[in-house]
Length: 137
Image (cartoon, rainbow, N blue to C red):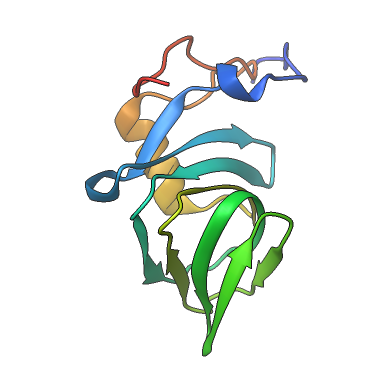
């Protein structure tokens, strides 16, 4: 395995990965050994389908708002709010304003790794990321 060469990143320099293509939802992933961070951007009117996964997820809303579903609860989240998604609990949401959030996944979410493979945004063994964006900023 290659020795890691990069430890510090600038968010805007991480490549964009589409994750819900029909809704225009994309993210910038950063992978650690046992966790992943997603800097997600949902445009106004976008819906992230209700889904569940094995990994735990914490979502930190940084901009905008979203009608967010976690289990049997529906909450209007706004910038500064944090949601905990336990393993296999259904969650998703829709935004009228558009929103940005930071999602933390532990361990890595397999479906997101597959999207990174699909779009060529997987990091190199030394921790560097492809110097490209698949979506215009």
